[in-house]
Image 1 (cartoon, helix red, strand yellow):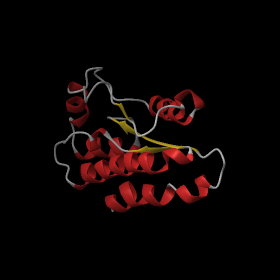
Image 2: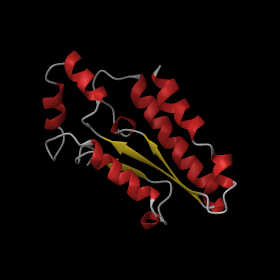
Image 3: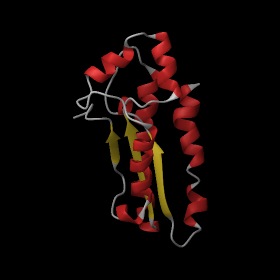
Image 4: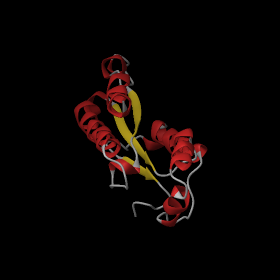
Length: 141
């Protein structure tokens, strides 16, 4: 299941040919995870699929940059989402363990992740392509 959603879903959604028909191709921001940047406990396929998203992102940035398309990825850390809520129910204490390895000492809020993605999509990031922005409270520092 996770490989279909985490990687193939992003690959299918990129729709690069449709974007390239626009004279101002624009930008794509893919969602990876800190799991794609570092390992984690009791995880196997998830980090592999998130690392694949990073490779897809950097390759597309390279391949389509001359066409005016910027392709970046965000790599959120622990974020207050339904997925994390389900993880907390299955593994009591996981939130405290994750907060303990995060220098800011807490998980992120969805709007904090969205703001970073919005910046990458904006003209203010017009010279940023092929980047993977960790939004993780310092977890990967």
